[in-house]
Length: 300
Figure 1: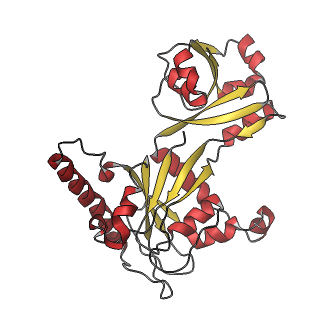
Figure 2: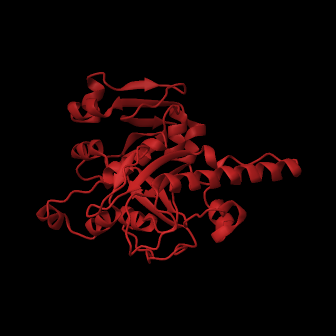
């Protein structure tokens, strides 16, 4: 099961452009409000230098990086919690998300149809709509004597500023990552050689890693019979049986023990067998908490 992060923002702030650049999946990015009605869903690979290095140990293996699911939710506007601009429908798409990416446009462009230019006002509207939707649903649950759903306003969030390299950009102090969505989309359509020739590098790896961290994820690895090297995302703090269950649903219940080595120790040893002979592989039980960079063989 992949973890989901939803891109939200006001109409025409660049959500679908960022989505296209991240996933290389073409969706409509026409310049008008509510261009996206149904959420666009894509899978993005998490950049991982460790996986590239480990691949040298199993050169013939299929390499499978960790992935997260990215969802481009339609633009929200003031009054969304009351149904404005199909707001109720759009807000409902956010409940399955494990985290949210607030995309704020930090530049002005006369050619872009915009409802709000001020970055702080954009963020305030988004947060206020999530809060009011929570209050609305809590009141309804109280009347119906039911438990309210998890609060949208309390979901883990990453604040991303969409900037424009050729324009004047607003400074927005709460911004965690800055990204030029238009430039990134152009880069995603270039070959590696074309990008090198223009001396342009992408900031998307930083954005993906920030999204990964926002989801509170770490990575462990498995090497299956020398034929498959795979990176797996797992919540920080999960025990070994939970990790086994991510690899295969039956493994959590059937878990007996795990043989574990740090990725760097394995790399220095040169092979699993060498690592075992050097005493670098430890046998751990059900209480073991998986660490970032663990290479694991599960015993069931």
